[in-house]
Image (tube, one colour):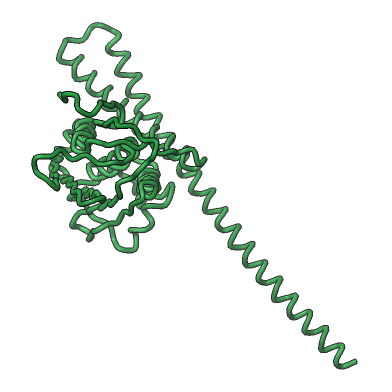
Length: 290
């Protein structure tokens, strides 16, 4: 009888232990769900502002243009403001659509031989108004294997453009007034290294992994002074990994931040002989470039 009682006590003890383990797992799962809901709520709140604000500006300014009572200089100024707000809205929506494709597993690679310098210059040009608004200077430095050659690299130009656009947008957004953003790109063998350096406030070591989480921003609530919805860097990391690469950060608080992206040249047996000048246009090898 004593042995039977001892055996049943042992079974009850094991059952209680298993119950505690399951309870802890459920508590952890509930906490993760709570955090996910909080992040989603913050994201929806942020994105509402990120979409509504530029739309309100575009509608208001375009209404003024429709009045046909403005002089040419004022009309040009309003047109520039409309363009900038529409550009920001387009940029945010592209990130949302890209995140949705990644989440659904529908983000496919389109590989071509890409004119990297031309692509970077196009991205820089598209952000010139944003940089000018903060009086931020953006420069580029390219290192070639052979100085007489153009910097062509086999990759997905659309994904590379999205990576650079997010890094450049963040660099300008977090730079100090009249600061400097410097882009460098170097190709060696089958690897391309892209760096984007700003002169902002920097990122502490404990926050360097947080910023790559979806919907996560270091500024929240009343402390939020910068645009964004917490998707850009999570998308950037996902795309870098798709391009068989890695991304890392070098930064010290108060001394700016440098994002370093390394990607490998991709190969596709079905790739054509086309060359991509940027993420949208293609030209054939051997034709004259303008």
